[in-house]
Length: 232
Image (cartoon, rainbow, N blue to C red; front, side, top):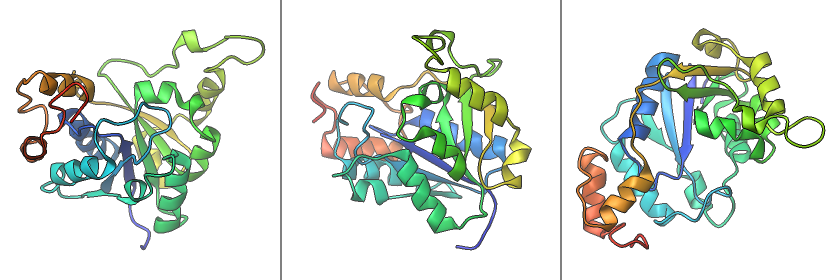
């Protein structure tokens, strides 16, 4: 693929994909000036408990959720390799090979995920492959939680990430100027929607319309997903 404008990469378990995910992606595209957004359902997320739905089902829901959104696509590769852990560093390396050395890649994260970045596999190398854009609540400054800093002897957990944030912090305008390396906070509409709450509501027979796209709800209903506490 030839070099073009910044590409947003948004990974997640998407169990199920919901309106909070889609608003983050849509608002990131607008706020950061991204040409496209690619959603990447995790096949086998190593830092999370096992997803309730199979990887292919979660992929199918994401494909339905973005079917009518121009400029959005889905990467199936992690689902295709669901027998192996889905490490973000490997996903970014694959995306970099696919899009070439010069296209700006922008990994989209929520503030909570970003605060735990030091637990990620080869986390420092992420900045060699992509920018990281961090979604924050309106009016909230992005900071590394104090309780993760200064723990134990030497440099505490969180201190290394805080140092990276201070040295790499940039603005949306910086993303198109280099292929990788910046950390850019951006504010999004605060929506109190979680996949956990949606699963719990479905398990007790509740209505989740307008919490997930209609096409996703139709898929959940037709496959009877999440209808018991065990997710099936």
